[in-house]
Image (cartoon, rainbow, N blue to C red; front, top):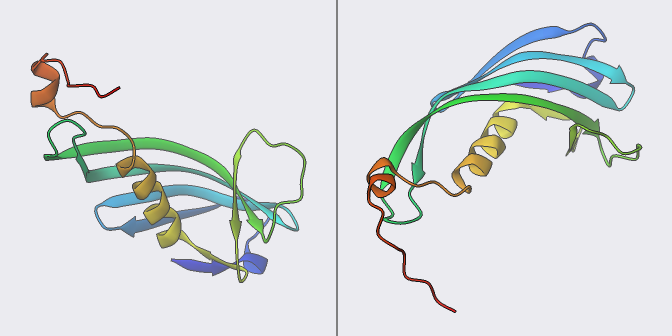
Length: 125
């Protein structure tokens, strides 16, 4: 789903975006001429790779996402929320989902069989 930045309302609007095997669902609204607030949850399943054995495993997602979208370079004060800078004035929720999935997949995951196996991992110094 794509929407133009300038067309985002100031009252919260609900959205649902399906991407691959996950769903991004929540609200978005404009809080200033250059900032949009998104409160959403990412649910579904995705595959991740175990860092010990390399096997792929399905994990369930139930992530709460609160962030701001900035139209261009963010020139504000420090913000507690994550700020994502968008280009071309177009908000692409598929890109946001893809970015969140990439972030989750790049994290360190250990599969259930490796968790049960308490063998020490060889360390290089």
